[in-house]
Image (tube, rainbow, N blue to C red; front, side, top):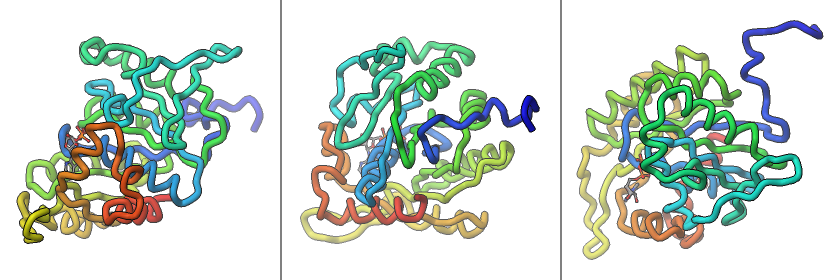
Length: 260
Ligand code: ADP
């Protein structure tokens, strides 16, 4: 009814954006940002209009992953214009401040920065906005999950026990704020030797699939530990963009098809 204030009011839709998907991980270094960007590109390949918001205030890596080092301009409404790369509308806290500055921010500053990047950006019309979340399950993550109208969350984990325990915490957190978990991605799932083709399960392959089954959430796919993924990421030419016909792009597109 008009005038009613529901507890969901703070979760107001973002005009023009049909769905927001969070990419989360229990801890850092598991490949969350790499997955978020390549997933965004996979969704783009499916014909969707896609944006990417790097909300990882503790270590924004989207500038490195995309090679963008410009600052966003303001439009006439004083909204920031997202940078366009690979056909994605991209915004990162790393475009605005030095990495070291963001790292020392306190909770409320983090929240207001993320809120601004969501709502004071001229995103235009998007079918999906992929949000690269800060790693972990602390207050910043909880508040973010509560403030953003999320369609759901994708959890990235390596097969290792430690990373899985953290991912489990992430699942519990999203459950607490009623955000559906779209599924778990196992990153660095296995290693395929580029020289001899032999496969090695460095971190004990299959842990995330097993965990997903145990917890009753979808298992979205396995991404190998592969030098191509690392070099393309670190040079600003993500693998879905630089090797669109390769095996990795196919994996990310398949994950995109499951969460779209
Ligand atoms: P996070 O966002 O979880 O901190 P990043 O996406 O920044 O992790 O990845 C950490 C490092 O691991 C980066 O150097 C990245 O290139 C590398 N990396 C991520 N996923 C893979 C993979 N599947 N194969 C090889 N290297 C990877």
